[in-house]
Image (cartoon, rainbow, N blue to C red; front, side, top):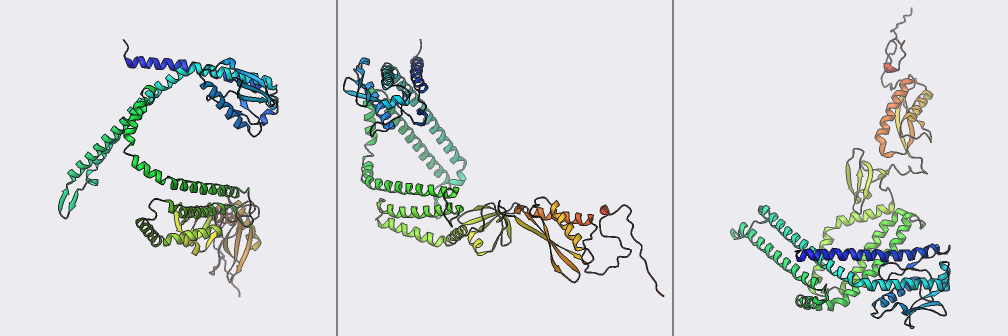
Length: 561
């Protein structure tokens, strides 16, 4: 023979299958009804927002129009609540629902005096039908729904109760298992780290608690806490299980009274504080919604939807942070008198002590915060810019209220206090790399003797710049002659780039290309600081760039008589 648990399980499964089949039948009825309503919608109906009538979690039909001061949503909620009242009527009869014409259209009336809903001419036109046809259809849906709920209520109620009890029992077993496992882990953790956490209690040189006694005492406390938690869990679970069935609900009430009686004094104290708590909540909610309104405008300014002359979009977030701090500070000042014990000398003394500690220990932090604020509104750079501050060059990866972090080309993250940033000069290499900017002007110098043609040198330098990757072709590179010294001419090649963070690579490639272009043009890169007899000397141009028939000229001496 089957035991009680197996019988209960089979009963639960059978009820589940029956309820599921009934629910599917009910859903199919409502879906068919809604499909008919949707199929006949007037072409103008999609522009209206329909509110569903859902008395039993399933949508029966939609309401699109208002009546008088009742908007469509209020009408839908009112109709749903009236259908629930029909369901709760123990003497409900299907034939008691009738259609009666009224000044507004057609009413669905129960027992000649209870108006469930009114269907107006506009309701009918919205779905492309007459108000009477729509009222008939809604009447049929309401009748079928109420009858179905009444027939299905008993099975569904027992199904919920049995399922809830099984769920509670499963949950209690899981909680007890988790509590035991947690406390076992805690005991093992304490024993394993005994030397670290339990050194005993000493007074001078004498042990009041030895390390072993110290551990034993803590383990006993842990065991006692475990027992208390388990008892509390079982005690709370009994009223929860008893409250599921009406027959045992009285026992649940009694058990709850026993456990809540000791907490009565604390509750009364809380109730005394409740008016102040409500005042605090109102103040907090008020300030919260003020911040939400401000944040809405801040977000719009940050996105560029709202533009204020002289106020940049990247100022929006830091400005909001400042406003938020000020608003929260003002809120705390208002809330402070409502806090319990705010007038006590102890509370006031602690507040003064904390304020003194904050003032003494945060002078540098406040200086950096003020500097960060000034930097934000100065806008010398933003995240992603390639900058130089003092001897540090790199990409800005983070800007906070206290520090600025820069990542160098060697992938080193350097943290610079904002006070240092403000007191130092900074160079922003990324200021003109946007769509409207030409870019950063890369430049390097070379010195060549007067014996070389400056036109050939200009041509070779420009060709080297055009060959270099990451340098812009437009605007075109150009050469400046920056000096005429005693022994050489100083040339400077200038070219634009929109990749300032790649400067080391750009300069390296540019210098390589300058050597190649000068060698190809037969120009020697040599500044004549010294005197040299070139007659008979080999050229300094690499062999790869020389003609195959090139021969080192012989040294000649002319004699005169």
